[in-house]
Image (tube, rainbow, N blue to C red; front, side):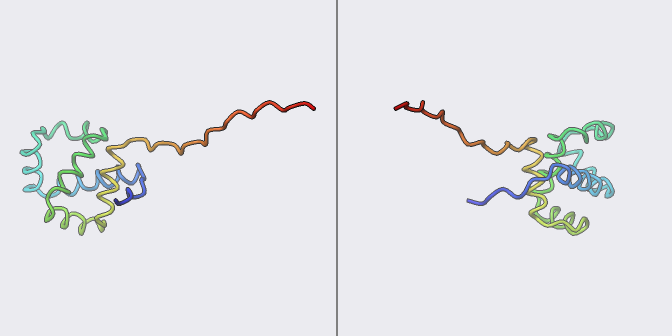
Length: 111
């Protein structure tokens, strides 16, 4: 089993927004994205603040290996960056480390 990549929520959001911007720069890519997702162009700006939408953008690219390779090349990203972004955006807050459970001390015996 593979460990999840290190999570950086700010970087994940930056990656997703950069991916969305790269899609938007190419009219053919944008039309395909809007057609497949059913999103209206006027809604994108408001949706871009929603981590679930951003996760969906990264998922959309990750599901198409040729598109992912092109966008990763254009943005100088590594495949692990996409994986980290997917994980971070789907899991908004990492769990804090578990604190060790302290057992109560038994009463002292007086002799």
